[in-house]
Image 1 (cartoon, rainbow, N blue to C red):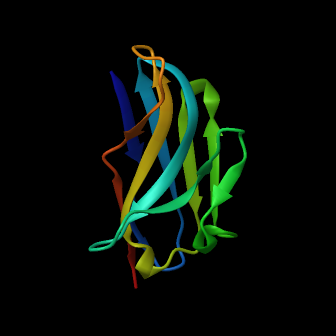
Image 2: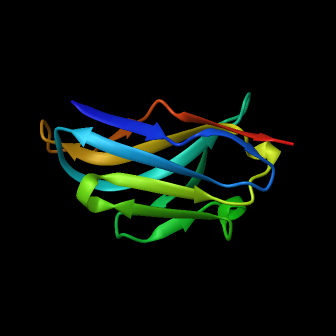
Length: 121
């Protein structure tokens, strides 16, 4: 089995910072890439930032200049440093790993349960 677990969410004031972490573990053969998404209340899930299969990063327009995505391949961990947070960015932040499990020759998406980020005004 494969598990994806996010952590680091919480309550922060407007203009504050948070660092999210995401760990993929279990019977993993290879991770192609990992990404962060978020879903505000009553809205659709949207991409925040992440890595691509060639190792480059991509960011949503709103994340450019304030958010930084990084990773530690040795322990299958993805990070998201978020600065200058705004109240409208309160959401559940999800991590997705696109990977090949040891039980298959194919790649699949694995999602975490999410971590709540609340930005107070």
